[in-house]
Image 1: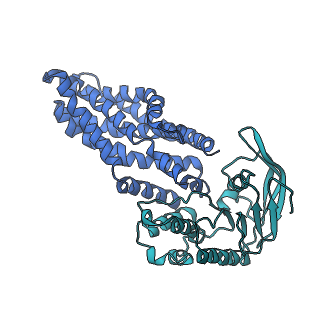
Image 2: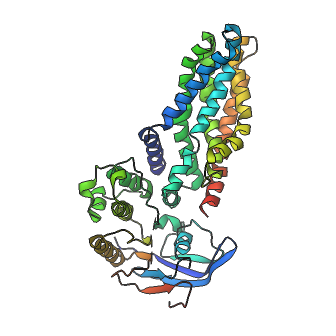
Image 3: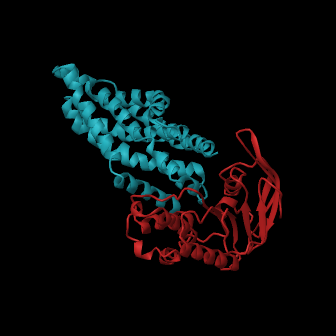
Length: 207
Length: 222
């Protein structure tokens, strides 16, 4: 399914607790492009992703969508995978994913494909409370496949993943971008994905 | 609609799965009502006069026990962030979660009340009206509890603060709930006007409380 949605930020600022974290930030992502957000701790990487997901208000500036319908809301096009995994420990792996597929997608994608994306098929019936930290992370990332959405916001996605899973994540990002999706990844450790743009917060900006 | 239904079934299943939640409320209700006659002595006339009031007060306290569960777990594990990016407006999310709380707390408590009424010598003819008044009033209890739960989100030991915030708001529900049930016992007054007031309170909180809860949730996530 080819995507044609682009995302642009115009002079956005972030203010938290009376302190300006960043200001005058602009970028423009065409369909199929990815942005790597890096910077020291507290530079506002998570805040930027949460602003795009609609969880934090913009202190100034605006975000623009291109190629979307007139009534499209930005948060509804975004997948936000943050530090917390949003995993219910008393549900099985499959039930966890099935809920997000039902809730997030208008027409649920194939659950089996989503489970297979991060090799969770064999764990599908296990209570999520028994998963390791890395497996819970993979379950959270599987949400990306349970409900297709054009914009992926990934906050430190490789935390607690093993090398093989990081390769799966790289492959997933590559497929997503080739299909015309957009990804914003906040990360310290390098991914193999080709990022069309890089954004260094809390220092010199290279757009 | 599909998303709201998915959220509702998930919350109801979670309440049963994560045990304790429903059991605690019902157990608390049982214990409070069971120790009341021990404190008041075996005066059957006195007990049957205060039965509707006792049952209502204990129901409110029992419902508050699980009120912080409405949003707290989803806030802790990050699910609230993802719920906000879903297709439902935030007030609808808050309303759906309040309905789930009503189904898993208000309804079971209301259905348990006639059984506990036996402990308080509640006259049999008062039982239908008591249950009716509780079924009509508990939606207001759950929806108003959602306001308190969203305001105290992220605070440690929020349960007591939640009770302080929310219990004063329950006063009208309590007054009209007890008036409905007492009308069958003490006589000539008709139970319908207070029952209709209860329905009005519930309908008003179903409309207004989710808006307030959504505003508080937005602030909590900042």
